[in-house]
Amino acid sequence: RDASDNCITVCNMENFDPMGIHTGESVVVAPSQTLSDDEYNKLREVAIKVIRHFGIVGEANIQYALDPKSKTFRIIEVNPRLSRSSALASKATGYPLAYIAAKIALGHDLVSLRNLVTRSTTACFEPSLDYCVVKVPRWDIDKFPTVEKQLGTQMKS
Image (cartoon, rainbow, N blue to C red; front, side, top):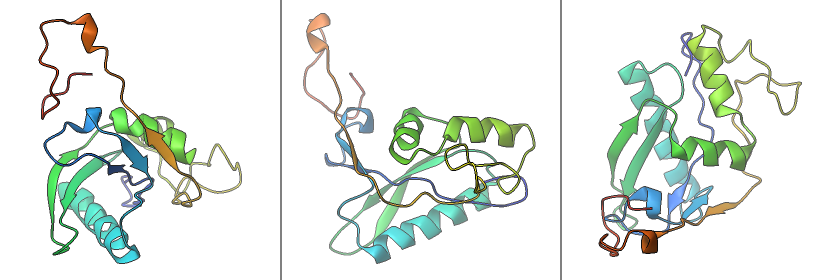
C-alpha cells in the first residue's frame, strides 16, 4: 500500500504443516493450492481492509488460520515490514518487493513506479498466478547437539 492508498496483494502462500509448527520451518507452497477462489478472494479482501485499517504504508504480510470445514478464519499475525516470506514471494512472482517498498518509503506511489520485469506496466498490478514454488526448510540441527529436535512453535532452522 502506498501513501495514496493504492493497495495490491502480490503473493499468497500456504504452509503445508499444521498450526503449531513455526512457519519458518514449514514446507511452503506458493500460490496456495487448497484454497477455493472464494476463499482466496475473501482472504485477499480482508488483507487489504486490515492494511488500510492499520494505515500501513509499504510492504506487509498477514498470516491466517483457515478452518476448511467451517470456512472461518483467524488472523494469526500482521507483519508491517519485509520478512523472510517477502524474499520467497519476490522470487516466485518476479515482483521486486524490497525495491518497491524502498521506493514507497521515499514517497513514490505504485502508479508512478514502473514494473522492473515488464518495463511497460506500473508497479500497481497484481502478478498472475502462473507459477508454483515450493520452499523446503533446511535443518542443521546436528551442529547443535543440545537442541531439542522436535519441531514446534519456536523456530530452530
